[in-house]
Image (cartoon, rainbow, N blue to C red):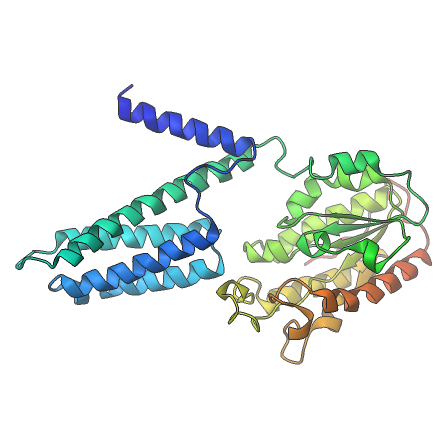
Length: 362
């Protein structure tokens, strides 16, 4: 094997291994460093275009595409497609820059900027390759669904009471300090930030069924929407979780997906939430959920109506980032879930295992 290829192969193996062990690959940039690199590359592209004859008009479409790529990246710095778009446009700009005829001697500053731009492109390429290694390691990981997150806590959990309620979901659940809002209650938090419904389904036995709650509160779907997952697919995953719980005689409460807003995007461009979580799709998923609960005897928990403003967005005072509730938001949610739990306890126990519920077509 040639030396250069062997070096690349070893680097890939080491990067893959470190990702499997929970260590990010060495070339992976922090979000703030990635955004600084993106901004600097745009500044360099504009400056070089002015210095090189005829490059400014010729590169105008590419520089506009670079601007769009940078804006997208500011909203989702972890997005592989956005990083790839930025990288591809920078490569196109470099190819055009190198192809332009040089009729004059360029200022020394322009030569320095070209060297810097090439270095930034190489750094961005290394970051993108490291991101691929990390994503592939996660896909191949034996713990893709994060079963180990709560493994020790599950072992230490006391025997369940007849009032055990399990809160299940993503970051909105994960961040909720249940002991502060519901002191002295047998309430168990099994939320994991960033998870989608398929991942929640993958750990449902370990983090729900084996803990034997009397009631489960499922709040899920917003991350699926942000990744472009069809509402029908989300509904199917939620249906499977609800039917599994029902088969194990666990009362089911399905919480509506909460609204989002863009009110805080001036603080951080990534807080422009409606672009990736369209309000119309949130309403569509909630409509399905409400009808599904009514058809199958489950409790529908309507956070949405209590937290949406007249414009159809998450009330500005209930969030600091347009997606996650702040303390005021959780104070709105707490009495609603308490009422839903109490209402569910008044209902008959779920049907015996083996009985199928009526599916609600989307």
